[in-house]
Length: 138
Image 1 (tube, rainbow, N blue to C red):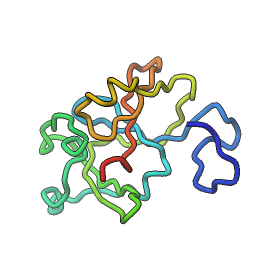
Image 2: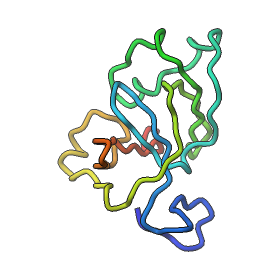
Image 3: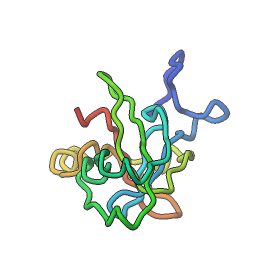
């Protein structure tokens, strides 16, 4: 996750090259994040639309919590071939992670995990954040 010059989609903070802009959310009871550049949009999920969107929890391989009790939103993800929409529990927030807190998965763990798209762990004062690269879902 190093800074590359000239990349307009780069999500590292322009004020500091020590942070990464991410979108954080909860899936399967775990705090999760993805690079902000992977997210195109976020919008409310109406009651009528609730069953029409696959929950991001299950796509990632995390246990789906009771979706009928939680407020959810629709998260539009940028994938190389087209945008994809998933439902995700609120809160969904734009935030920054210190690069020093982000640790790539060791090769053996990456090869054995059942969590789709898991690429790193961020250790923060709030606890552990699972970092996902949703481009790896396809």
